[in-house]
Picture 1 (cartoon, rainbow, N blue to C red):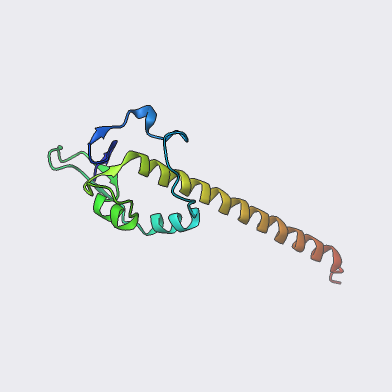
Picture 2: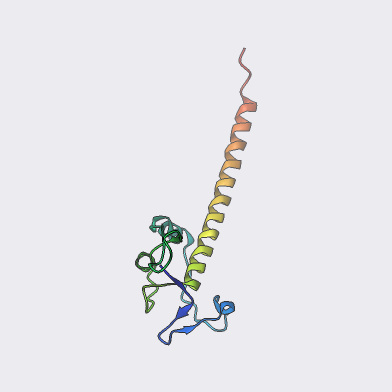
Length: 127
């Protein structure tokens, strides 16, 4: 796997500061369902690996680019790399989905605690 800042047929490098698009420089393609993306990430094979030219003791962690592209079909020219802008976007949408899920579960727990407390106050003590 390689994460890259390269994009497009011209293979021009995207400056680090431009890795996130400006609203005036992009054509929006649609909304993203964070829960669906989170399910895909949860199923994405993650492993440790090293590049063939690196010493044996070096380890990286992440998905293989081929698995990434099979999971997230963004139609990039080179399937041997994971574009940095896409990896960042996927990570951020997953963080948002997890945050929403935590909020939902927190609300549910508070509701259940309220039910438990109210039922305990109505039950007369055992004699």
